[in-house]
Amino acid sequence: MSKWANYGISAVKFNAGRKLVEQVVAQLDLETIFGTPSVFSRREIVAAVKKNFSFVTIYIREDGKWKKGQVLRLANINGHEYLKTVDDPEEADTLDNLPEF
Image 1 (tube, helix red, strand yellow):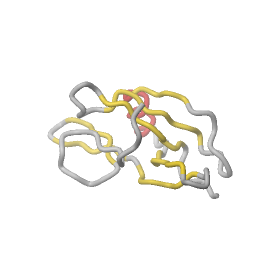
Image 2: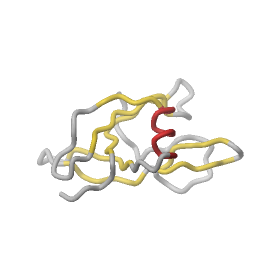
Image 3: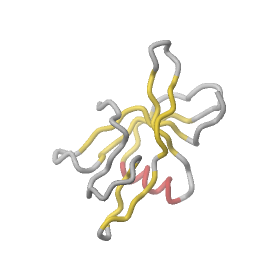
């Protein structure tokens, strides 16, 4: 496996309105494996993206290996920043149908 990003995001927790991510589970991409899962706040993820850290969504395959999902980016919609893995105009975070925790 080659390095996909600085971090892989494997799970997400949305707010009560289900529009914004509150937290994610992310792991450092160590090229051949992913590091220990850690919980990060939405604010931490936004700040890291602005500092040019890269993130991709990741999923466990049936054989126990990681599968690469989509690249995470920030989208400014009507003056608000949203976390996106798809290009859509929705005023909400969209993270590639990750499992929730």
